[in-house]
Image (cartoon, rainbow, N blue to C red; front, side, top):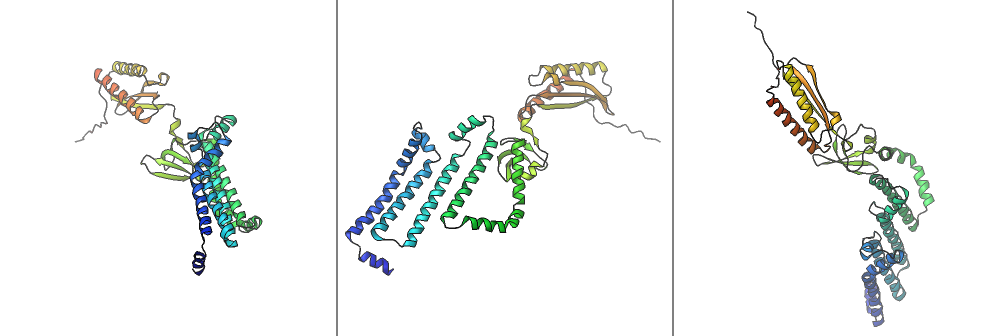
Length: 353
């Protein structure tokens, strides 16, 4: 406190001007940070429009860099005019270097997305058929590597010896390996999912315990939105070793009906009904013609069983239910027209006196 009081006692007009200059440097860089960012990005790509530049993933990190750079210049100017403790000055410089590393690592990480023009250009040249899920997984891996490298650079800036750090990790390697077994399993499980592609983001899948839509696939787990609108994260190691039904890859849906008629129904009527149902299905727009089967299938204890079997190209479940309902209505109408009744479970009981 005494040093601060003495500082203000010795404060001259020249010192006041230098202080105002330092503050002005900070304000100047704050105001012009957007312009500097725009100029730098424009130099690297002159074809970019103003809107494209502002949407560029490096635009905001560059703005932050110039703001911090202005603060750094102001502090260096303050040091020249008034002098700053050596240790504090070293700390300020290290903080600026660390912030610079983090800012550019963040900008580089943001540029690695499936929406990035740069990534889409590379994708077009290397492999146009690579799906978004696989590409997103690769980009996540690269982003993790970027942050790991940034972490090592920060450790170096803080004055730590990386060789000593690596040696230290070697000592505890056994513990780390044991602790990371599940993580490694999930990582390899994720790789299996991306290589085999049993499902992708957006697919409707079903396994033993869960059913829902895939929302995301990460290194460790897959996030599924269930039909109860809850979210479940399933480890990739479990998914890669489970039997999975992918309903989204269904090309057609099956319609099956066991139509049981009364046992005393005349065979002529049974055959006529069979033919009319078959013709009705052939005329139905969404029914696949070569899949239609309508046959006198079996004689049961309750009556005559006609099997009605076909596929419809209505893959969407709601649409399929509508088609199924429509076919059922038509079959009921045919039964009514032919004056044929459905059989119901019956049992005759004889009483002995």
